[in-house]
Length: 328
Image 1 (cartoon, rainbow, N blue to C red):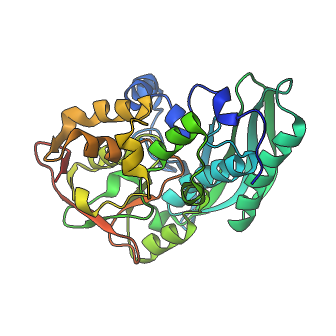
Image 2 (cartoon, rainbow, N blue to C red):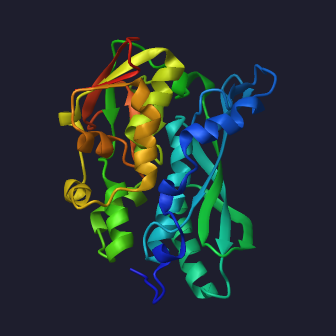
């Protein structure tokens, strides 16, 4: 594991997907940017999906996305792996296959050496190689805060697309990675403790989960990242006009997540996530449980409407009720 005398996580205000602009503020900004309807733009800004999708012909559509963030761990190589897996995940969340990526870099070159940047890029390239995705260049700027990610292009069958607005009542909800990386990353940033299992979860590709979801006939999915499970679930249920019932006892968490919550390692992004969905939420659990469900994830798993072999079922979709999400 490559580290540096300068702790990368101390060079930025936020870290990972917790540094996203709050969802409510972001929606206000992009609300007026939806252009004229086009039959070939299969997925655009309308429902806050994970990527844009444009149809080429009846069997092929292009998936386009970009994702980058400030350091989430102090290891340059691991940060590169995590950021790449996170960017590639947007394509997997649409049911697609990434084919080419370009790097996006902001680097404080007078503070951090180019050798360290090379480690970040090596981590990203190694994960893209595991995905069978080419990495071809990119763009960099001199930036006081280090930032890294990728713009990724993929392909998908338009008839097998996973999207936010296709959830149907009567189907289960599956989650393909445990939650909890947000509070563990916050603990790492504050204390320097390293949580190798959280790193491996974040660096893990969602390729197998995406392929299994598509093979099982799923039509609605999203990946769980900066807006937390509750935030991403709210967007999907709102777009689909249905309600999600979450079984909180069935939701898996990484070892140490509850202890990190207990000890106060909760990001401002997590609290904003919960505040955003609270008005649309009916809950029978306490505030701590809701904070874990809203925990701002970095490179989380897929949340799929349907049963995914090997993934826990964490709830179900029902006809629209008073609340968009019910937590039990």
